Amino acid sequence: MTTNGQEASKPGVPPHPERILIADDEHLVAVGMVSSLNDLGYDVVGPASSGTQAIEMCREGSPDIAILDIRMPGIDGLAAAETIYNEMQVPVVMVSAYSDPEYVVTSNQAGVFGYLLKPVTRDQLRVGLEVAWARFLRQLELSEEVDTLMSRLEQRKVIEQAKWIIVKRKSVEEPDAMRMLQKQARNGRKPLIEVAQAVVDSENLLGD
Image (cartoon, rainbow, N blue to C red; front, side):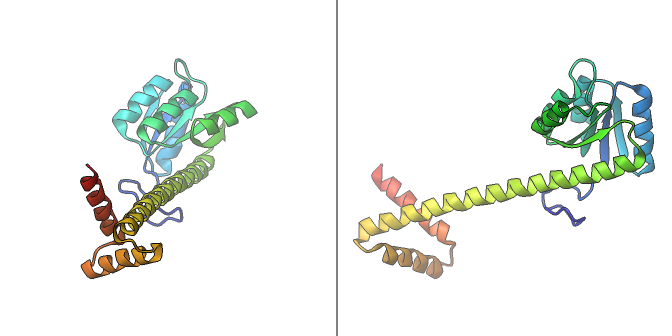
């Protein structure tokens, strides 16, 4: 995954957002944002007039990113944002006439990637969406890095376990057991983790 305009590494994630969901209960504001987004070349889903409708449209319309007003009837924008992001992995930009610190803090907690103050101009939308999408891509990057790290740690545990099984079976020192694993991997042209897993599986089978 990259944030510099290159192709995203996660399948199905474009380098730039293309479909934008709009939700605002003020009709004129919503229509204005739709017009600005169309001028910028985006495909618009909506507008929705409530948080509930925004969630439904998000499920049906599969937008890349959503722009939600904070104060809407029924489910408000923050609650809708949390559902949209947690369930559908669609990042959200909030728009509001209010700049209260509590709104900003709550937005961060809800997984919101951008915050724009009304009235929102076309240029603010363009820049706000670019920044929010870059943050979203970075979040995916970090998630991938964590997954990779966890995978490496799990592999290391398996290799360590296999090494100590060999120490016990062959009555050899730890470095010798490791060299035996590495040699088996080279001779068999297999990844070290695959050889180690086979040793562990064999030990578990014998143990049962």
